[in-house]
Length: 600
Image 1 (cartoon, helix red, strand yellow):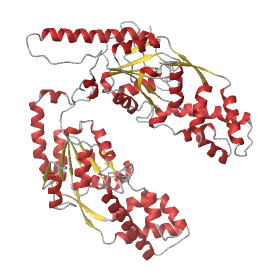
Image 2 (cartoon, rainbow, N blue to C red):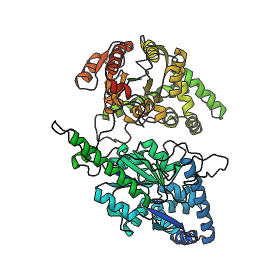
Image 3 (cartoon, rainbow, N blue to C red):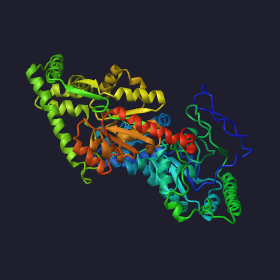
Image 4 (cartoon, one colour):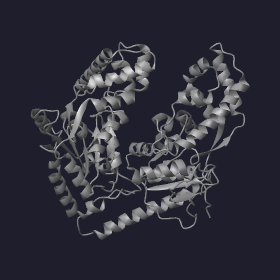
């Protein structure tokens, strides 16, 4: 009998694990993804690791002319490792945790007690130190059954991958090579190399993508509930298996998700793997016999997927097409604005008040001029960047970044102002962005916009927002005044996401909240580049552009002809006709209607 795991907090109830008897029939996998520690290897702690690593640190510091005490360094290393363990436990509660950079691990945790110049210098060698530490902290021993499991997968042509949280993927790769196991794995995904850590589902998705399969076609095998089971469920793998190791029974907090199968060692995985694969082969053979005399469709067996199937992502993922969802731009779609001629003076008065509070007063004329000139600098930067948007070689990683409020107010508006005031403006940048948003124009709902939102609410269609803005908080205030804020779902604002349209990330943030296939989403904007190119680039199925916004009719027509828009509408509520037809199509397609709930 498999006992329930203990949590680190005895007051938190544990989730019982499935019993060892009565092994469930699992779907045949097209790939197997394994954790490193707790699955492929188990570790035994080495008591002398901190002293040995401290000697290495002392030697490195000596090249800087710094004389460190090895005992004090060892204490710092032990304290840092304990604190790092607490951070990792807390991070596993997050929905999409990032991995710490090597320099953060070394500089902020392990060597935090060292003198600052030494600490900063040694952090530059973080990769080397962490690779050394990985082999000093623990001995690594191959777990029972791993050789047989890998051989079985090789014989069955089941591709293998590693998915592991690691401070040094480089060290893990070397350990696998020393054990002679690296040749079995098609991909190795380590958190320090991809910048995210389990339970972030992205690590499993990256590994599955690298093996040419979709997550539902893979089994994921780990040893922890809070990281491995949760990551597997979030990624939507076909089965989550636990091979018990020292951390399995002590999750740091209660875990709602449970694995499909719990085994004492990886050795126990061979039998259920064979059963699943043999069952799939038998079913396929029976299906072919039943189709004898009629046309047949070639189906690649799970035991030996064809290279064509692998290159296409193997077996298709069940469709999630269903009811439509809607994303709307704010400015030009929901709201039309009339410029406020007193904008600069109103915001300038707030800067004057701030200057007086910090003891470096300026007059209203100076402050108002700083607002006007700073805002124009910002607009000029946006225009220059937008000109480069069509040039794929122009800083692709950051060309859609939204401006940091500290930069807008401290650098662009603050240019020429006293330095203490510029520093204060940087600190209060978000508040000044909200003030500018409130003051720059007088908003009013665009005719047909609120009617569209309310109609969608009545039909059970989720509506979200994708908007470039200096203050998402300010947009929310406007929508609350309109009485529709509570009717809106996921709302992605560029100042909060950090990316402006047409960047994919802002669209993807809203799409993630819709829990819908992007092909089922209808997006409405008013700009051919930001909304048309941006929406299509994010994979949105239907992009509509509105007349009467920022772009001319000619620009909208060009977007339509170029495939960056599917419809050009005169009013937001014209979308209702498209939605009615989409609902009719859904009703006529039972498979689509049944696909609306979230996929398992």
